[in-house]
Amino acid sequence: MAHFEATKSGLRVANFEIDGLKSANLQLGEEMQAARKDCNVLTGQVLREQQAKEALARTENDLTKRCGELQGELLECQSKLRHAEAQLETLEVQRANLEEKLKAAAVFKVELNASMASKREVEAMNDTYQMENKRLLDVERRLRDELAAAKTLLHDAEASQSTDRMELLAKFSKAERELREATFDIINERDNLQAELNRFMALPNPCGVGLSLIEETEKLASGGFIKTLKVGAMQPGLSAAQSNQIEVGDDLVEIDGCSVNGMTLEETRAKLTGKRSSKLTIKLMRETMDDGVLNGVTYTITLKRGAFGPEHSVVAPEDTDMRDAGRWPRAGAVTAAEKGSYDRGAIDNRKTSRLPGAAI
Image 1 (cartoon, helix red, strand yellow):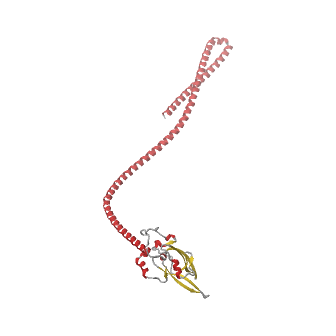
Image 2 (image 1 turned 120 degrees about the vertical axis):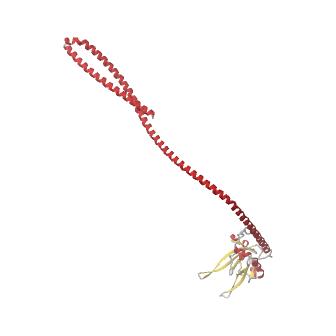
Image 3 (image 1 turned 45 degrees about the vertical axis):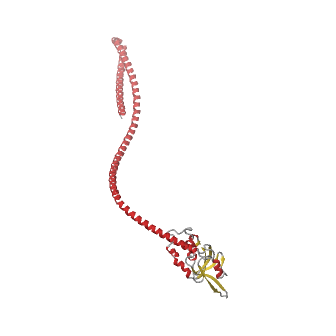
């Protein structure tokens, strides 16, 4: 900015000198014109004096001398004029340079204005930062107060936590004691079930799946007879009852792929019985009424001979077979309804209560 002011001051001084030189030039021009007029006058006088030589003879030397002086002054004025023109050219160059500097100063002024705008933005941002800093200081003070309050609450909580910890330890000890008792009861139940299963599996072979069949004879209109084997009952605890698929009244159709048509009840019994835990696939048919029309729906199921308990009875469908992969059921794996299947009294009743028909 100081350089710009110095440049403007120099430009004003140069313009003042140029104006002075122009004034001197004009004055010299006026003097030259006056001298030329005087010369013209003198020339006229010389002409008039030549016409009147006698009248001008007395002043010829003076006029000649005066013309020489005027010519010298004219030459001097011309020299000064050339010098002034040279100075004027120099001043024009300086003026051009000053104009260039003024243009540069205008660019600098634009940059200066941009810098001032940036400065104002920075000052505005600084004010914003100051306000934000003040707000953050207020937040910090508030947070410190909250931290102090939280420390007080934490101290109070730690004071009450010891009491709660003692109560929790007492509850945990009680729960642990109850868990040990429940575990002891489960282990006892498992041992009892294992003993019952061992006793059941120790029963003699061959054995069946707990089906009690009855033979029904239907007389045909042609005079012939048709014999069918129906499910009369199922012994509790064995595979047929545990499958939850076979119902009383279903017709036995096939045993391991062999049709029972034409078999006697004893032949069917021999076909159904076998080695304990061996597989047996039977097909049955269930009569249903559909819009007043009697239809028969067949289904196939694979059971285990002599199997005890729902987790060991059904082989197919597979989703009901060996739900615990041969292990004893986990706690909760056997429902309350299934636990009734393990009722020792219900199992022992099979020794004394014989269902009608041939139990196989």
